[in-house]
Image 1 (cartoon, rainbow, N blue to C red):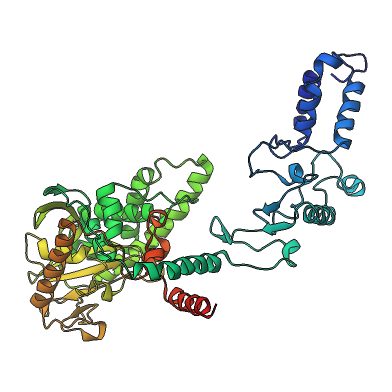
Image 2: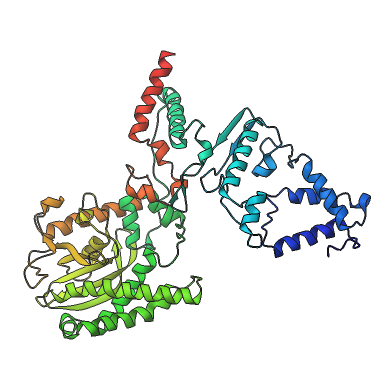
Length: 522
């Protein structure tokens, strides 16, 4: 292809050059490489040059490379350029994005077809850290001469990994985007405050009420209303969905669904405490392992992994599931006798004008007749989340209040490698453990803020709170959470929520007072 006697158009020679570069493992990116600009310049002169030899083509390419690089600027005021396209230009201001330690200077990336010693000796691109540092310093000095104002920024996190700024930025003046944003926001609010004092402000957080009848969402609707009515509005009225977090392997949501399916199959076969005690530890674990493998394919549906990786992941996850769930079953062994009355049972409940479909994880009936509603959880839980005044986890109260049978206790079944256990609340007559040690607390339990005198009082308090949440939903209440919580920090709906602007953080109030004082002095 590169014979001296061969003659081709510049475009054909460019095509041959790219093929050879690909064979050598060279990564030529059209966006970042000026080489493509030079090829384009030569190809546009094909009518003048005509067909040419390889030597002639290389000579023209060298001439283009030795000349100034002309970035493809348009009439727009803002241009997005790579560093290579940027060099040699003149600008009013330059903003360099993504200046993290791994990007500037560039990381070493040696060509496998070129000996390492030769690449270092000739100073080839990406051949050594020393070469890249020298090149990056040269870039920096040139950029500083190209504009009177140069700003460099970097992300604090990339894919949940903390990032550090490039060492080339140490002599730049540091500035926090968050602090600057708060200062600008506080300044705007301070200036607008004088105008707003002259206006009558009406706060209305209500939207058009929902239609009575069947509503989707189940207990999730009560959870969202309890934590943040605006979140409930977005999820259950607008229909916004939180994007699934991309991660390698099994995420917490899939793992929770999987553990539910395993335990559903286990108790469908075992059924009660008596049969559980008959099983040997080996038989119990073998049954869990069998059910885990049986339900595994449905858990990993729509996940694209190579077969060998999927098999290795299955082995690890199945072993983990057996250990965690067997630890919970060992807790069940120490309990008083019980029958599993229902697993993953669906119910339709009526709350005010609305009907909801809910699903109970499990209901156990003790030999003495009392019933316990159990909610499986793969994360840590606190009893304080069940307080009627600050209800954060309404699932168990919903099951207890609206069940078609009398419920005498509620319990979280916490499934974790650290500690699989039960915790909850009960009527005084309920006996959970045979040895008398009760993980379920009787009332009153004032140490955790439960002021109710007994179980019926707690059910009444839950009922009032749940009807209050249903009433808020019925009236179209969609106000944002009253204060910033952990939910706000990890909420995926932050882009459409202006809570941080409408209700500033405490430090913003101090900042606003400082700005007002400084403007008064002026």
